Image 1 (cartoon, rainbow, N blue to C red):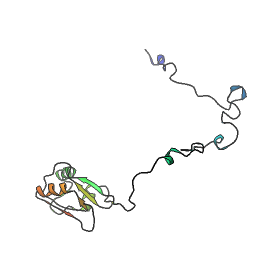
Image 2: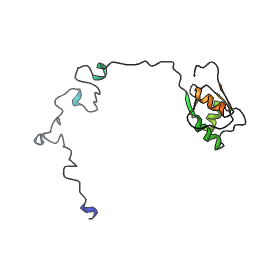
Image 3: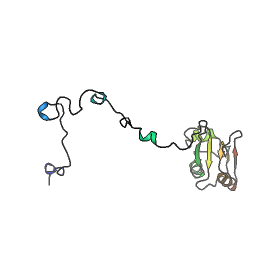
Length: 157
């Protein structure tokens, strides 16, 4: 077999209908779009429009509530923090603050603060100062001989 022997399976590739090429073609003049109106023009996309019937997205009930002033925290896991400490990207001689976490590249941006979760193993004696932490994360840090301080004034627990 050679490259020039390769062919698509029969019926796999269908040639596009050439529209607007004379009345004898069957799709001449208006190219199958009918007469006048919005949908006969180019550049029209009426998404979700169902011909005057109430659209599906309006017929379905709305659920839940989105709190307009909710806080969005940058989340880190203790296992990833341990990897950064082992790699020497975070120095544990002084307190590890949110700014240190951002500078090391562990957190891209602080958002409304940094929240620590307990996923992964943790064994470093470190003094952590963050906006929020889970109870399991706090216990894991204290079991490793360190301390975890949660900033006051934030209800991130």
